[in-house]
Image 1 (cartoon, rainbow, N blue to C red):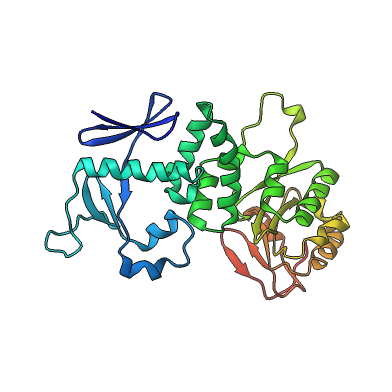
Image 2 (cartoon, helix red, strand yellow):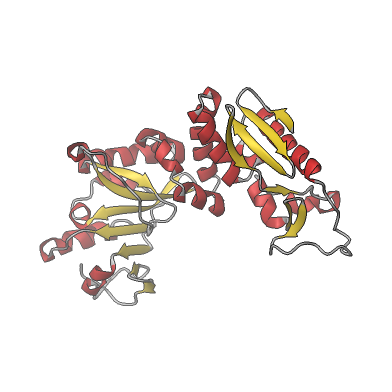
Length: 314
C-alpha cells in the first residue's frame, strides 16, 4: 500500500487498483474520476473558463478506474489517436497531484470538481481544520456569485447555502445597497429571505423544535450582485415599503398567500410602481384570479410561464 500526505488532515492511500481519500485518519471516499491533461493546441478554447467544472464541460475525456472515457461513458477505442493506457498507479499520483495543488492554493474550489471540493471542505471542517471552516463559507459565496449554473445548482440542492447565516448570505451575494434594502424589508415584515437559484424554486426548510422563534421565510434570487427575483405574500404586496423600489434590477415577483378583493387596487398600484418587473409567479390555484392587466410585459406562472396580452385584476 502506498500513502501520500497532502497536509495534517488529508491523506491518499493506494490500495490496488483504487485510490482512497482519508480525512484525519478516517476513510472519506474513493477517488472516482480524473480529468486528463488538456492538449496545448486546445488551450485557446479555455481562455474564458474560471474553474475545472467549466473546463470539464468543454473537455470530453476523463479517467475512471484507469480507463479513458468520453463524456458519453464509452471507452476510447485503441485505434483512436487520443487513446492511451494509464495504470492505476499513475491515476493515484494524478489524484495526489491535484489535491496537493488544491492544498497549496488555499483550498480554492475552482481547482477541483464541485462534487469533490465542497464535500472535502465540509468534512475537513468537521475534522477541526480551521482553514477549511473559513474557506467553506467564502467558497460558497464565491461560487454562487460566479453565475455558473451547474455549480450553483449543486450548492443549492446539497444545502450548502444553509452554512451561511442571514447577514453572510445577504452581504456576500448582494451589493451593499441591495443587502441593506432586503434587511429593511425583512425587519418591516418580520421575515427572513433565503437564497434560491430561480424564484420559482422551493426551499427545503426544517425548523427547530421551538417554532415560536421562527421567522417566516421568503425567497430571493440574484443576478450580478442585484436582487433579480423576490417572493412576498399578497398582504405584503398591498403595503410595500418605499425602500423596495430601491431594488432597481428587480424583474421577477413571486406572490403567495390568501387573496382578498379588498386590497386588489393597492396590489396593482404597488406592482405597477415596480418598473422593471417582467414576470409574476403565482401558485397554480391563484392563476384563475388573473383576468386583465395593463402591464403588457408581465407574465404569470401556473404550471408554466404564459405571456399575458390583456390586463388582470388581483
